[in-house]
Length: 229
Image (cartoon, rainbow, N blue to C red; front, side, top):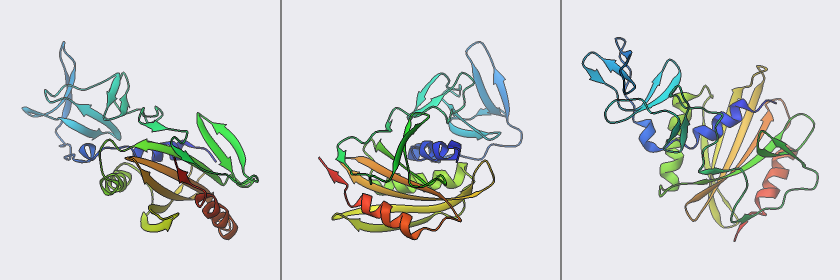
């Protein structure tokens, strides 16, 4: 399965709470430019902060000018000023740091666009693990912001949340479905461990028509090996 949606998901999970406080863009709003740069105006007013315009996310400084060619809140804004979802944020690590985990020998390790992927079968079922620094936010603040962001900027179906105790730690769990680029139904099951203001995210992706009993058993056995240094 292609990984565009998964990379979009990973990027989405990094949205800070400040990025979620957006106001609707007025129908009369328009782009304007001077020698300093671009801004987005609605009459005599201009927009500031994060704004979604024509399906793309932009960030406007307090003076109204559009930011570009740099990171804002950990998100890369390209030369055209919009958030490039293909650019992995610097706060996200695709290798687990400060944690030990044992993967089953039957899982096949691979690398896909910089992400380490473990395949559980020949139908594309896979697990990706990432580490995210929460930058002082609590796990609840982070999870709430993540869910709001997913609902706001993605086309994922209903997101189900739950908690579980694994190795004496309370973990958060997200479950939802979406259609991939081949229009196939895909299920995502994500487990979030927290330690020292970091989130350790284990993402299990599989086709909705693939039997889950053995897959979930193997995935849960792996989670039981997670220990922190």
